[in-house]
Image (tube, rainbow, N blue to C red; front, side, top):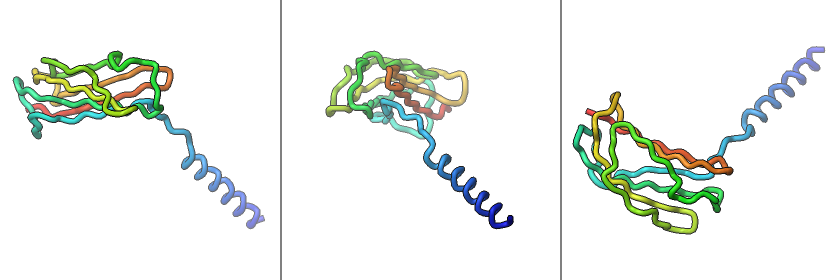
Length: 131
């Protein structure tokens, strides 16, 4: 009886570990990254201007949604200018945003990019400190 209990316990434990390790993971069709290419600092104050490079990598290779459909939302920033989307390679696109810091509602400045498509889209976020 004790051996049967031990083997059932190991079987249940093994199945639980298997499902935990191999559970499905949500995968975005796009990876969106941000890089400050001009005026990078530890913290920003009102009036600071910076240039942010946005990189979109299409992980599912083809996307029926144009790059221009990428939506940007901001807290504590306003856009002064942008470049057109530039195709760096078959599945990588970049764009630069020139932004100015305005007073945010909280202690952080936030820039988010969102893409919606039938392949789960993509999302990226940049959070910066505000003085």
